[in-house]
Length: 377
Image 1 (cartoon, rainbow, N blue to C red):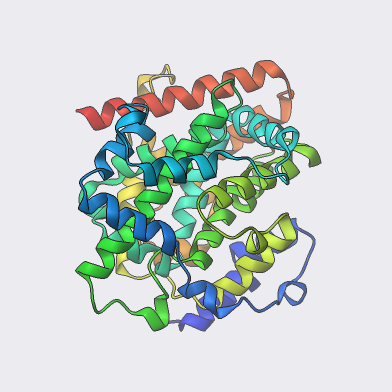
Image 2: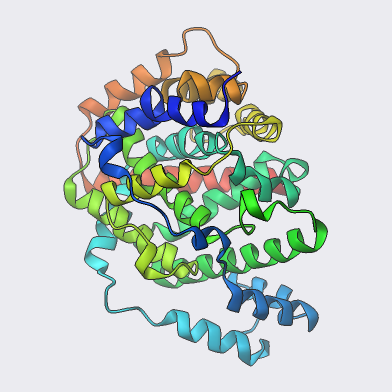
């Protein structure tokens, strides 16, 4: 059995990390830059205090309802109104033209983006077991993968749209997640006084949140490229700027958020050196995800609907390296490269167009609706 250091070494010299380095035309040596150790112990303290106050005065539920588009603003506490107003002010560094490029690619990528985010970004993230610990502590396994996917997909869709209401939706969605992070952290610290702060840092700390930014930027872009989905330099820059703004709205200090592919990879590389790798919790979360097979109504074939698990496993095997597949206990499937090959062929002959963006947006919203209905049943 390999040690923790050997697992990380394999990742960067032979596995998915090496793939990311090759795609970015860089090397491990160029990425070495020490991360301030305090980032693993820094959290959203100010919002934690607000959440304690709102929970104590029983206004937290009303606040969350408002952020989901329900409830009356006038009935909410002044402390929340001040918090909301402060975050509604757009900083001078935000470039909405770049954000529009990022949202355009997010939508245009359609099902390519969703399959990449699910079976590469999210599933591959379980390799780093430190990230799974807060999920396990907050009952993610018991709540089920379907609900987790609904919330994650809903957040991603909400922050990556470009219609007239997009900025309000983006702000409120980030505030929802920010408050949930604080409530979860408070619950973990109360529920588990033996939390391993030395090895894991604070629950949902700044360093881990910045590492998660990697999933929505570098992992997504690399995955689209591997599926032969074409995108421009402006669209790539737009993805990074969009998620820089989103990450800032989630409470991360601006000066530690990466700006581009190399900065993100550098942070991710140095963050990974401190991580524990796949354990039993990681494998349980991974298998719950890989076996989740909510059918998409936009897929016309009943045969395909009945075999969603086959599709997800095929994409996972196409993206993930052998070490991750083994540690997460992802089952093999026959003829696993048929689905990726079909997607690549379609992407090679597809043209970048407004029609493609519109269809991608429709497809993504349709999948989100499928998950909404699945969680109502």
